[in-house]
Image: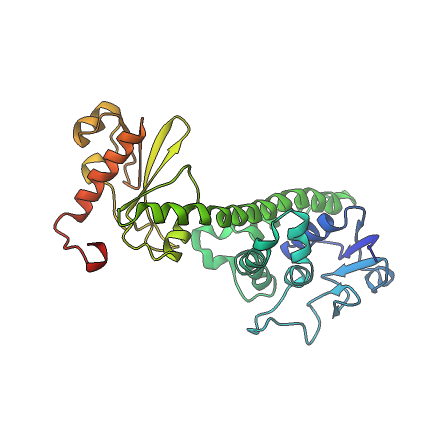
Amino acid sequence: MTPDFLVTHSGGFHADELLSSVVLTRLFLKARIVRSRAPEWITPGADRIVYDVGGAYDADARIFDHHQRGAPLRDDLQPYSSFGLVWKHYGHDYLGALSVPDEYRNAIHTAFDTSFVLPVDLVDNGKLSPASAGQLAGLTLPALIETLKPVFDDTDPEVEDRRFHEALTIARSFVEASIGQKAAKLRAESVVEQAILKAGRSRILELPMGMPFRSAVVKAGADHLLFVVHPRDKDWCLTGIRRDEEGFELRADLPVAWAGLTNGDLEAVSGVVGASFCHNARFIAAAKTREAAMAMAERAVAEATAGVSPSPANL
């Protein structure tokens, strides 16, 4: 039965029930959110889904709490919050509601659970501290959601519900953008795979537009690739490939002599007419034409591989 009510607790809100609400309100557009701790509301019923309150987890009864003794754990024994439980049972349907293609849903469901849902679960259960992010601690999503709560001396009786719904709109944008990016990454993989085949043993990968490429390069085992070239607006972009998913170290940097130069200065140093920009950190450069971008890439490859004996795989 389609629920009429989505019931969660009243009072201060946190990331887990707010993000659960993002999923459930997308699926049940006509259902009304009720924020209450009253027994008549937090008891399961045919007309409602109850989450982050109620002291029980029973998917058949549509109650998803995690505060009780014997609270549910993942297969790896890490704890769920209400968000993880709602995602487990409703995540696939939610992806369908966002028109994610069938062939991507399992992969995105798992990836989003690992990268987005699980950290929220762990923070809510006290198993992970935002402080572990160091200077970025205050910019983690759970911490940012905390800033959306009303201040302590705002005595308006409606303020908590109002702020909850304001925060819901903001949280929705993050969830949907994250899923949209994951879907785009999967769409890009097939394009990058074809470009890798076309590149052969070249050190330069040419793409038809800017797109996520590193995961496809790693998946293809294309360790020989050093630089990527693609059109961008009215010019062309040349970028390095990161060695690892985390961090900024590249397989090869652009030439040190190019660092921070633009236009005529860069043309003179690089020897490429049409070279227009090189970032001071040497991870990205630009050119006015494809020919110029490819020429810059070839010079960057020559410098990066100078004095390096080719491996048998690259012969």
